[in-house]
Image 1 (cartoon, protein in one colour):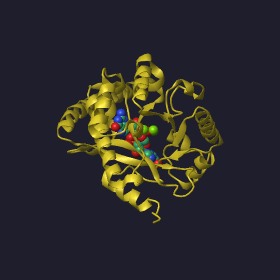
Image 2 (image 1 turned 45 degrees about the vertical axis):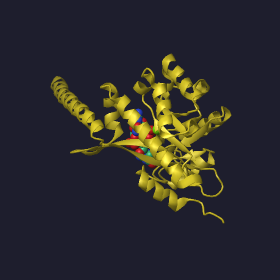
Image 3 (image 1 turned 180 degrees about the vertical axis):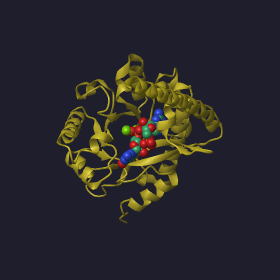
Image 4 (image 1 turned 90 degrees about the horizontal axis):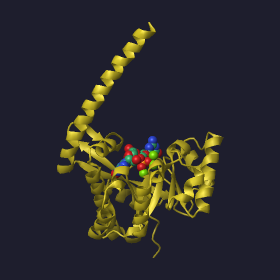
Length: 288
Ligand code: C2E
Ligand code: MG
Ligand code: MG
Ligand code: MG
């Protein structure tokens, strides 16, 4: 009986595997077209200051998040296609598109909103992008072409990626030398730890949603957030709490002196137009 169950599982697994391969093949082919036919677009999620006195939900920054408007599947999440893009060598094209598009948008907001524009643009990087030869030059080319100031750009890397190897470390230092800011994304989910934070050339630590979402109910998670904020601060880094969904979660990270927050409580990722409306509705009143 156990054997039969095992066999059953094997068949199921086999079918799943085949479906995954077929689907992956579909995604790969479609993604090549998507790049040519401009089906990719970028949404922006506000990152808000938690500790400023007055307008606490005023955006200090935004994070660029890529989406794919697929002709038959609807909107496809990056969770589904970033890894495929990495594996089939398309991540360079996808990543460059996101960087160029978001820098263009950001510079336009600065022209339109002046002081009221977001101060920082966060863009996610994947490992394969960082490993591309000559990529630092690609980045400085995009900055020059769009008029984006390097210190306004923050590139987000994950823990495992940042800690991994010499080549990645060198690349991160090259980016820092250009004046670009770096953030450590999804902190707490990888293998590195508070003890190795000082080894990474990052300006910001983003505390993963899995901690933030339990900060108000689990003492353990609360303590981990608190320790992260303290260590980051002692190293001169600032902190962002990711995935804040409730006022209770916001209250906890604010009490623990996390500098910034991001999450559905403040806003979902928005189109450029919707972001301008969101900012307009929250801009501090001008006193004349
Ligand atoms: P991430 O960089 O950690 O981005 C945060 C993710 O959490 C986003 O998912 C965002 O929509 C979601 N999120 C924000 N607030 C909340 C909340 O309150 N509750 C919940 N449940 N979720 C929230 P998204 O846009 O689906 O992106 C997923 C991941 O895909 C990103 O995680 C990032 O690792 C990757 N990604 C997105 N855009 C890009 C890109 O342009 N390039 C690369 N390489 N990766 C990207
Ligand atoms: Mg991110
Ligand atoms: Mg994250
Ligand atoms: Mg995350």
